[in-house]
Image (cartoon, rainbow, N blue to C red; front, side):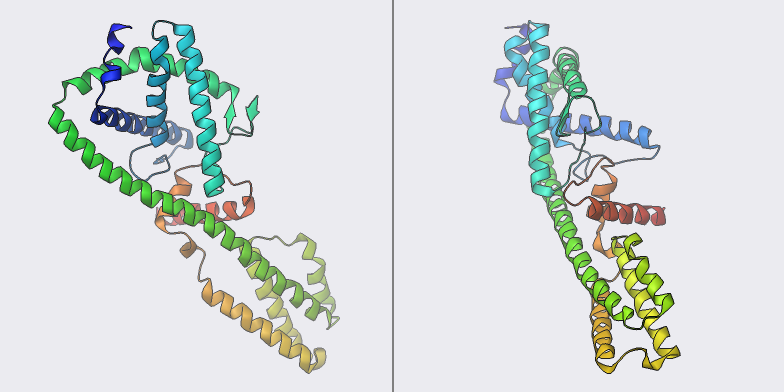
Length: 317
């Protein structure tokens, strides 16, 4: 075996932790700087709030492990990196999307992609990066690790483990809450749509030309939460206007049903007080820190939440 890799099988558990955390941090630095330059604003990239990207740490350890048997063969090292990193990226992406209903990266627009989770260009790059990683980057990192006092490394590893576990737990909960919030938005929209359809039928009873034009705009009305809320408010305002100008426009039973609908809508507005409160700072940061995030299953709901998060960020600046 190549001399510089002799010690790799002899790494202690704390040394593996050191390498994992080091590459998590290095990956965060790389991603944050790259995305920030691309976005022309600072982006604290990643799933977690702290300066660590577990996918990079896992990927680096994977590259070191899969390249061990081929350390003297550049070509085999390259292909080991392609296969290992691509498999890791695909499994991680599929698992996260299945669990959180959100895709944190998307290669759908790239040449020869598979389900948007992996693509040819990315896989080719992983192979070259594995060579760079094992033959250039890791050498000084390993030397630094061996130069550190063992006891100090243990203390640092323990402290980082506590911090990262806590950060990951909070971020994991925020991602699950974001998923549940998208499901909740679907239910809210369905409730408002039912109110809107019934209100449209009641408005039609008056046979007022102005009100009929409003019904004619039904096909053009959006299904965004804000649009639905505004549409209902407009509908109730038009009914009120019609009753003021023509008190006989609606019968007693229709008036009672309108009042019932108005009561339900008022309760809805009291329950859902403001879009900004739907997202706490953890969920807002998670959306802002991952500009390429999207959801196939809840596409419109996620785009609304993304807009809310960005609007909140603009107001805070």
